[in-house]
Image (cartoon, rainbow, N blue to C red; front, side, top):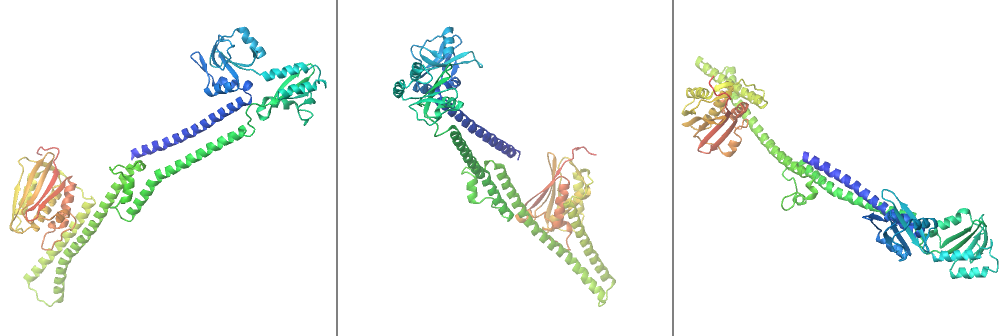
Amino acid sequence: MKSIKRRLTFHFSFQFIAIIACVCCVLFCALMFLAYYLSKQDIKRDLPSGSLSVLTGDTTVEGGKATVSDDLAKQLKQEGLWYQVLNKQGKVIGEVNSPKDLPKHYGLSELLEMDKTKKFKGYNVVTELDTFLTTPTYYILGYKSDLKEQLYALYAKYNKQSVPPKSDIPLIKKALKEKDASLQILNEKGDILASIRMPKEKTRYDPLEIISRKIEQDKYDSTVTVFHDSKKKISWVFYTPNNYQSITDESIIRKAWMISIIVAVSVLIATITFSIWNAFRYGGPLLLFTSWLGRMGSGNYSEVLTEKERKRVFRKNGKVRFQYRLYSEVITAFYEMAEQLSLAEKERKQLETTREEWMTGISHDLRTPLSTIQGYGHMLESGYYNWNEEELKEIGQTLRDKSEYMVGLVEDFSLAFKLKNNVVALETKKVDVHQLLQHIVLKFVNDRTIKNVQFSYVPVHLQPFIQADTRWFERMVDNLIFNAIKHNPENTTITILTVLKSDHVLITIQDDGIGMDKETQKNLFDRYYRGTNTTEKTEGAGLGMSIAKAICELHKGHIEVKSTPNQGTAITLHIPLSTNQQPG
């Protein structure tokens, strides 16, 4: 699951960084657009005098040449302005809409005169020197103002007195009409001394009113041109139509609000879209997992995915779709868990069946000897029969055999429980396999109670040694041999073989009897899969086979069964060899 942790960490970190980057990008673009809009409005507001700083910011000086954007160059031409950029030596390194009579190189005297008079060759000029982080660069913005010159000539001609005489008023009015202009004459206090071609709405101005109208001309429908006579303390204020675009109807604040609203709506839409995408991306798999858990909670382990869900999760080529790829390990884990739960459920049902059979077998095996003991008890208690000494001995022998069988059965049951819970401690030592198996086989050969069974022992040529507890090891082999005796007819041959395989010795108990079917082989070592009767030894019971398997596993080995019906059975023990194969 480490890979999914890394993938989720990377996925959400990347999303977080991407969201921050997108928001920053949107805000940056909005601010840049607002700055661009404000600069455009600044140019429109007072292009001749207020736009040089914008031009200098837009001018790129690189490789000894200066350039401006096409939009600004186009606007300069539309407004009838010219623009030049000079280097440290006074050479023109960039220009827009420059008249032909302007020089390509400026001398010191020309620049000083231009800076002092703000005029050059009949043009009004605005200049600026830039020394920030670069070599000194001089910027010149020039324009021709015929109207201003004409207004100044009118002012100079009739400004002989504080207020023109009545005889001059018609001449002034005619000249103003030709220029579509109007005039107000103010004293030092702002009182209106005369108004020509202007309605008499006011009698005086506050000191800052005229200054405000002169600076923020775009807010008004007329442009103000002021000529001041410092000696007479008289100001002539000319009003002419405003040729620049008005932004009265749509102020900068309103534009800024519109931009803010657009940005906010865009961010909101992007956030909603991202939330919906995340809901499908992460909510879909979670809903799918919920339906899985619901089915598994109801015990339906075989159907992890319905056919519809399988098509949603997997492509036709079997690969997980993009939406669910983030949880591919989880999907795999769900499948594995479902398989394990399904297997556990099958094993539980099998265990329940085995337990019932086991309890049935134990009840049957205990009931039979108990019935015999109970019957003899009633007969002895009744006093109805007269028993001779030989009959009493026979009854006593039967009672002892039945009780010994019951004790052995209970001991086996207790041993099986201990082996299951790993509470049996082995006392192992290095044992010669040949000697141990010879001893066990001879014990069966010499047992007079076992009739019509042939035994054969085929040892390996080498002398193998194992680490074993001889008591429990002998019990294990006894149980396997008794099983072969019990479940086969008379004249069966039982062969014990030993074979060496690298670091293991293989001990095989083989018979040529009736064999077993697949179901019997599968349940051979289940506790009490086969019952017994009181005339048989408990070592051959299903309990004995379970004990044999547990003892084999305690010796770090495993047991294998091969059988074919009517051909016989071979049970092989795989026991690890001792690390030291030297005798003693």
